[in-house]
Length: 282
Image (cartoon, rainbow, N blue to C red; front, side):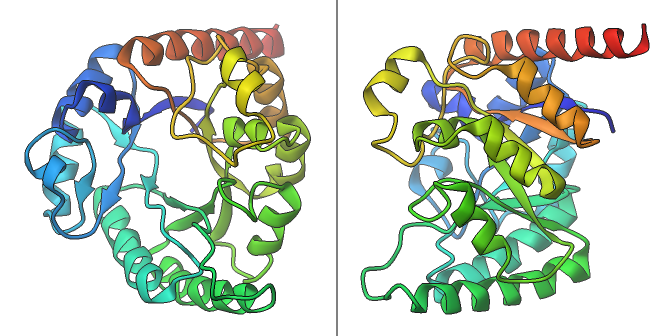
């Protein structure tokens, strides 16, 4: 695999459509990869067909059949859960890993979640290490990566992201970098990407509008979706150059809010990839 452009299924949320409708739309737009979001049990909006999240109680091979029908592959699973709540996250991540293996998704993406107020500054590391140790045992058995994402109070900094990664020594614990979350948290996303590029398994291609940047940068640790790639503050040519320098072969999973933004993101990123590829072979 070279560097490919995929789409996180959040793009269909603004239309109150189910997962199947999002898959069909992604294929129509020209994407080859999608990133489903998964949840446990039954969830009212998804059950009623108004939300794109997929229950891990569904038959995973039916999900795979749906993707195959539209010629799509999963770049990963969005399986965010609180690492500092092992009673929740251990069974959730183990289930997500098995689900990912069944549908052919190479990575399960997560972050540390919201910090529980009852854990002190020392306890949080012990608890997260326990959660990751349990999850990694299953990940190694199934050959599925766990991708840690910058998104909350600890991973908002590159130092915090790498410290969590360093809790467990496993080749199946990697980084899913999110350019938009890093920018909004006040980090330099290019410096952060350089620092983690040797651990990168997946990337959330999230751009941030100038207006959102001006009002929220340094005030939040992330955002659900960004604007169309190329419309905001992120220098995508620079991002792609960093990825190429690291020999990255994987998916840039676009996180935007609408199908129209998804289409423009695909055009922008595909154009940059093609131009850089042509320049390298000239």
